[in-house]
Image (tube, rainbow, N blue to C red; front, side):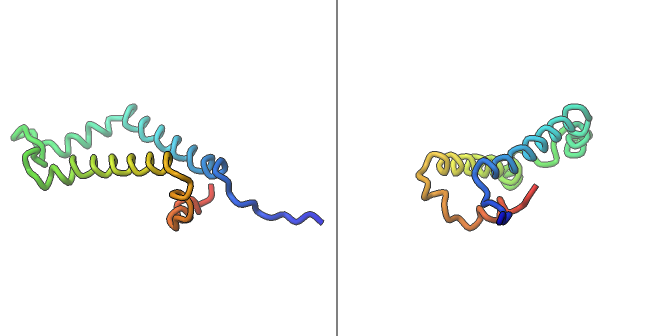
Length: 107
């Protein structure tokens, strides 16, 4: 008797499900900004041509943290955490509850 059961997802199957949608999304965003003038339209919205200055001044500490230093720190922190998980022992990567939430969607 042949019982069809769904096999548990392996790492390669999870990578196939998550890698290609991410690559396609990245290519789409890059293409959108490369072949349209959307980046210039957004840039024009945040620049005051009358004063010749940006709406968020570079010397404003709150704006600098919100738009420059903060996102940069978050990206660096995520990169360091991903490298640590990739290079660390397997027990660091197993048993995380958020893994199920991230990889639970099906393509």
